[in-house]
Image 1 (cartoon, one colour):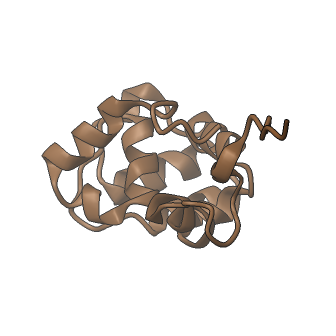
Image 2 (cartoon, one colour):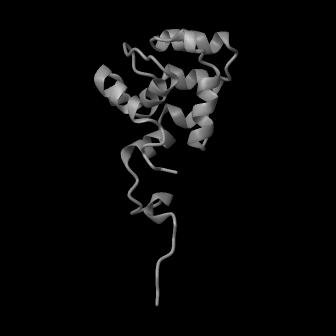
Length: 123
């Protein structure tokens, strides 16, 4: 009897894998400058943004990262955030980097951030 016992299914990537636009944006947008691994990239970003910096817009986040001696890839990624958007958490910043269309709409940004990083079941 042949059974497919793969635990991973189509989420591994590649053509026809069912990747959505967020997966592609994370690799090709400003967030891609932070590294290939999404978890490590999020960690690197949040290391340089103190909780007391929020709420903040793009310029304040760039200044915060520079004050915390963030590496240039972090600063450059933050410079890629949409102008005029306000972020309340590091996770909202991540959403702003990977889904810039959500950052322009406060409710969409909060909704995506509230879903949590693990709710996408990409791991």
